[in-house]
Length: 273
Length: 73
View 1 (cartoon, helix red, strand yellow):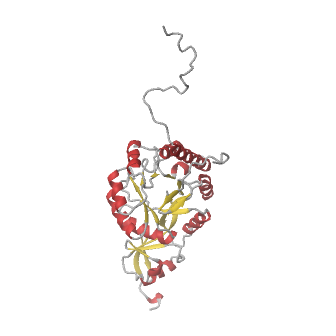
View 2: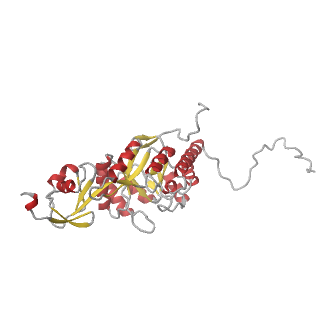
View 3: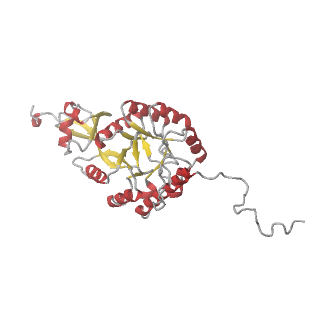
């Protein structure tokens, strides 16, 4: 082992649909103060994958092309989403349009069931995932921590799952760590990416320590006072969390156990009769 | 038929009602000033691949979506 190497956490590269991804941080591209800050945040995050979307283009509009040119200049893989879609049909059509426009069969599948929580509609999600997987898409479903839905998604052809940490944009971290931990244990071989709800680097680190394969986040970086520094902070936290997971965390105990050896403790027998 | 002499078709583009002399989806995309590969299209909720636009005739009341890359999370 080269002890001079920087302490990067990823001993084993992450593989998503057969593609090795160097970074375990997937970063969204929305809500940054400027395109330049977004570009520098992607670099500081060392992100290998960024999420993008599709929106209506006005007549003669060039903003879409300008944005895509910028993304292409970053040298990262793109993961188009179906954000805002509320039915399987909308999501399927959006995914097909994204495949043509971005030239990738990867899709972050969102079928939203509720405006207040932006909670996935699990029934529509499973239906759309099946149609898209049969059509050759590599589906990254934005789902909950529900194990039955997860099994249905895998049966539908998904080989990656993206459970939420908390509702999109809330920054609450892992709202249900017990259920997420169960999900990790129940699907030991499926790449699981925590998507949404991450607010602080400690949340991302927690997810990685629990053995999740990667974290997808956007708002926590984009709306930070200094998005570039926050991106770097997340990258460090994710590396640390992954390294800790691979190194093997100690068992949690209920009662104290001295770390300093008992043998040779001074004055040990003085108050003994 | 020459476009100027034809009746304009009333359709919806990205949710807004508009009249167009375009006969096909390909003509509409050109008339809207988009390059062929810079937008993706759907007609009445179904995806229309780039190469099929020329064969897709527009009819009264059609709903066209014209989408481009955008920031996303």
